[in-house]
Image (cartoon, rainbow, N blue to C red):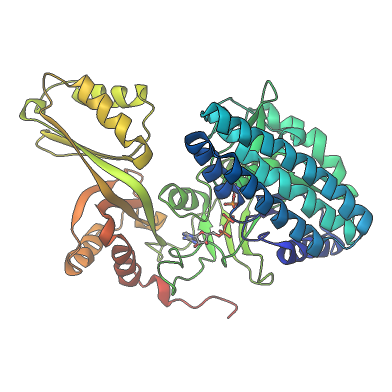
Length: 466
Ligand SMILES: Nc1ncnc2c1ncn2[C@@H]1O[C@H](COP(=O)(O)OP(=O)(O)O)[C@@H](O)[C@H]1O
Ligand SMILES: N[C@@H](CC(=O)OP(=O)(O)O)C(=O)O
């Protein structure tokens, strides 16, 4: 069972989570808990690390550390009644706060922030949270032990910021964790792991879902449950469309497409380990335990749900490569992609005009500068006339395995957008036919999501159980 940052945002919620875990254990289930950092902490760590490297203000770091310590002391005060346990946990928190402060002050003086130090700093969110959740469980009378991802056995590549778990992690987790579930509830940090040299790595933002799936697969869990602040995977982000409804069942492939195309409810790689071992994944609401949530399984569900959800990717940019000389010029696409790969650019969407005089790409906004630089230097003379870009772009996708072979979905999508006077910049449909995605101007993005959500009747279904 994995609990995200919103589920453990403060002491009251942590107590609730500890009671929830104990409740399942007392009902006869063996449980392993994976948790994120307390809500907002990872963002705070990243912002302060970046500012430390740019402004070098030690006083700002001290202020941040005081607030951070207070947030965690308050959580201990509310979630842990047993004084001896509370004292032990405070001791752990104090020593971690001390290490973190030294690291951030070091960054102030160095004025440098490497990917390796970003992972080290951001790991403290989870490393401060887990001792508190484990202490809260012990304080309620059930045995529990805290683990970092590395201690649990997760070993990754050294790709800081998006490290890949190595195959041997599965056996190591199995050896370190499986036997403990008989007598206790182990609590493991999500998101963070270690490379072969024992250096802290992270699995990417939102990576606790991935940790849960990895641990679940390693211990051969019957099910992997991801507890969130929403009633499951919804037909779209409820923050954009309040009428969005939870999807009772969805296939692995649809869930992956949804997360890839921006649904912040799941980490894009979260369910890979679960798929590999055929373990069902459930997304549930921490604050409405009885509600069944969304079940993610291998089977495709009912075909009549042609479109299951609408998603939105923000913080992307469009790049347009054009020139009459591209027509019929063999190898242009290969040069574009290899230049971008060499520059480490992640390409989200590709589209080529049938005239061949133009190729459009969508890349992460953070990669835009290096993408344009790489393309301009590759094509500084020759077939490409111009490399232009647009920063104010979003990608919207409609997702559903049921659209495979069903005519008219694209017509419905673009008809509705046309009627809503929403201009489409670029269109892409994967040959899997599980989604249709397109780029539009940022100012139109939320309206496009609302229009499509309504067009496909997604918000009209009542939540079952209501
Ligand atoms: N299709 C979707 N279904 C559910 N939630 C979504 C979707 N798209 C975006 N979201 C957002 O994802 C968040 C997921 O819940 P949250 O408790 O924050 O998860 P976690 O803490 O595990 O990251 C919600 O706040 C919701 O606004
Ligand atoms: N704390 C990390 C990892 C994570 O998964 O968090 P959450 O489950 O709250 O999205 C992050 O913010 O990226």
